[in-house]
Image (cartoon, rainbow, N blue to C red; front, side):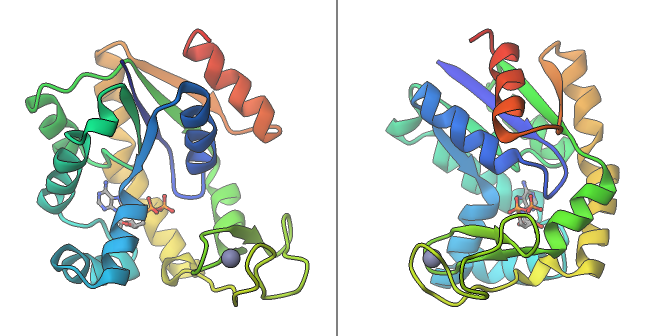
Length: 211
Ligand code: ADP
Ligand code: ZN
């Protein structure tokens, strides 16, 4: 049973790396960002509450997040372990997980410079149909504005505009970064530099996991 947290600013390679590690370990990645976007799309109660916060680049209230995560990790497909991506994002969320008796084996902090984050997110384009992601400069789709995988029109996420990205970074530094110290004290924190190829970064992560 391996329980991991991937921590890092928006636009770090968190999601990508969590996906790779998930496959290698045969456990699921639980992304609160993805869960919330799905809830917004489906128009559920949680989605309705979360939408305005997300569009503004603000954090969704802790009690909403704690509720959806607590419910998710109880599902049978989490019995072998799981990776949390994008949660906890505040000390209150971390404390809630701890109060629920959940302990983590490793907390991987992906270390990415603010300028890199800005560049990546403002150029990011996503397919609302199949979830594929592109970048206008570093990973453009073959036909401009169209998804390679399914042909759907690509969009820019509401929260990927320059102002909102700057705001999300501020929140990351003030609300989320203190989690590093929180998990450092529990001896589970490992910092991984966001440099080099996806494989390079993955090797560093696997080394931290002792694999
Ligand atoms: P990012 O690209 O910033 O890593 P995510 O896809 O993880 O973003 O999340 C998108 C948005 O969903 C966040 O800006 C925030 O509004 C909300 N959100 C996701 N996870 C959390 C969380 N753990 N706590 C509060 N809000 C969250
Ligand atoms: Zn697509």
